Length: 351
Image (cartoon, rainbow, N blue to C red; front, side, top):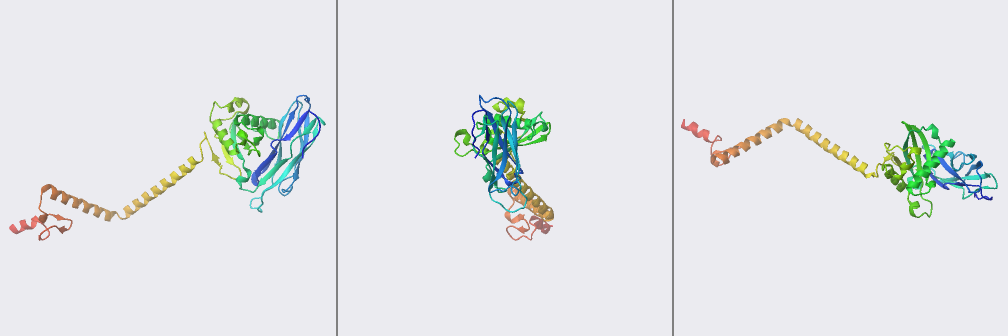
């Protein structure tokens, strides 16, 4: 456990204390937060960390990590620990395993101490989204370079802590539910990916919202320029023209790619795909019918001429009042025993 003695000064704790990742995540990020007590002074702070194997084994499932996190005089907030996960495409199938990260040697002792429990990192089988229950969201920040907020720098750690605090305040949950996991260079700014974590066990109220629900709420807030999300826009510079990319953990479409805008759902994309399928089938049927018509064009022409001639004879019989015995329909005479030419035969006989 991480409990330690000592009075006030500063407290170190993992935020949150449990993390879920798919094995193919590459790198996991564990956050440690330092908070100063009111009478603890403003000197420099530091605490050591190290990974410990549980069912996941160092060197086999993850790369062991150890080091020291530091806060300059007067500073507090979050620092991130980066741990590489070992996973090989097509490798042996593995179930859910876990390892832990432990804090020790808080400074200055005895005023600084470690609170809470060790951090537990759960590695879910590749492709099992339900085991993780987390959601990754990617946004664009305008006017800031990726190098200026690199996560392995002090400025990056400070940015990540501030970003998490601002966004989760709007979502109505604790800052520990959001972890900034990636910063990359983008057009005119930086592309930031953060993970929304599932609610802690026993959570109630707004804190009980699932990661997917928080992601949907974030997308709605992003599409609303009057949202409180933009009160901190000068520092985080969220780019409204960039549609947030939302992906459920474990290999959902990027929801690869599932994209959401303005609270829209995945059903719109599904119905659009179905519409294209129906249209393609109809166009195929039209093409087949056109091909058959072209091949049978001579027979169709003869049939149309026969129908037209038949129609004209009917019009003549009904409009001119001719007798049924003297009008032919098609090739067969109707009525009495002419020789097949109607009135013309009578005229020939007279001549």
